[in-house]
Length: 485
Image 1: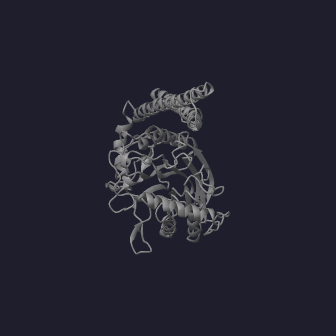
Image 2: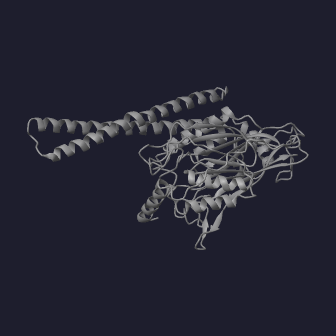
Image 3: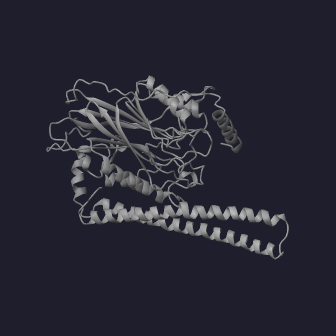
């Protein structure tokens, strides 16, 4: 993607929006009435929920962004009951997708708006968090939690701070009762090619966000089925994924039904991201509460990578996004045999409270191995919390160093300005050049001062607060008195 091409796309998009050359109508409001089902599901008839999570790469200046948004709406027709999209940044793509999805039966939707947006005069509500949920079932309640750590305000090219990253909760009403649907998009990794490891300056932020997500889920979940969809910008073995798996006992839908790598980013068949570090960073996580023996329950049936393509105007096969998505199917009904052809355990309890699994395709076998896991005298959650605390404290130390750097540069700038003022007073320096230098240094000093005290100071104190929360949580775990607020 050349610089000239990017500049031209920015110019065309800004002109398009500011002059309103191609107006987009507002979509219809979500349907207010609820469907009348013939009683709640009692297990005699299965209730099916097919979920898709996709990072749509809806950056307004991304290649073919509007065309891809239309094709995404076309791709979900008839295939899913719930669609969770990330990076639907601007109202043009948002309204196009909502309007077309409504015609396909997605009569309920919610877009999480509370974001700063890019500093371009395109009107209020032009930009949002990027999180859009489409549903064929009624959405009866929503809640949004903004992450305390969300990037740097001056890094507009990263779009994390202006997006106000966070986690959303939606209560979705199905014929089998309500389910808890969580959506999120963690801060990106701007390391070389997006590779994990040294150089990932946002690892502490992403770790803190994952911990906040886990605590948010623990504090608000209340239904038998919990689904968490989103782009975690992290591989499956990372601390960011182990946090919700250990603290909230979430399971990974893909690994529970597959043995492949399931890469969703930078694969050879995606021309938009190929060349970056290949990774599985998009997930559908879930948790199913234990049910009494003989009672119908939610079960994961299948999960796979969603690879969507379309033919553009030139006839070229084009991916819907720089990411591939993840899809999963859940069914409410009588319990089914697992892949080892065994039914659930004799006491009828679901295995979903098992915190980890040694196999990835059979939850029955996980139950057997899970007893050994839970018997471990040093719970894995303690180890994860210790690692979280270490990463957050490292992030705090870096933030303190960055704050000191801003203050040093501000102090140096103000000192030079003061020296030039004194020099001009005593006629040691003459000429307009000194006035220009003084003005530039004054502006630089003011910017550095504002960054230090109004942004990085908040970042330092937020790291301190998160470290204190993790310490209390760790103490509770170590004393076997777990208290999840």
